[in-house]
Length: 183
Image 1 (tube, helix red, strand yellow):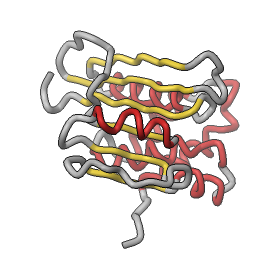
Image 2: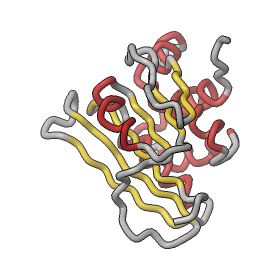
Image 3: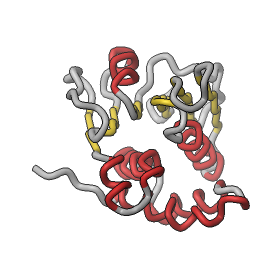
């Protein structure tokens, strides 16, 4: 696969929106007429158990949906960072929720973005959308799409029965997209 291929792994606890974030990224890839794979995985209990999702977005055909060496990693809990950071491809990009993860990344051959996503979402009265805040930052830093395209994809994937959450999801994307870490 080419360097332009994005091998993304999202990981956290069930109930943190890991599979929704993966679905969003897969839909984004499809909207860009790319080859896409989406492979969800979760433990025996959906809420509170482990959850991860592999997404591949490529211009080339995808031979396997398994992401064993991600070049983009999103972690929403400490155990996921412990488990998946060592497997990352050198030169990759790591995003983690610094509200929930108390340690720094240990790799020095990757780019690292600690985003207080849970705190940001809570502060803006959208506590359940930390995953979407992280997505916004991921999109900005990786250049996968601009903010307007992200909002359009969000409109396309939020199901009809949850249209009342569409506005909050778009605001959460924007919050992450515009986040700048204090220096």
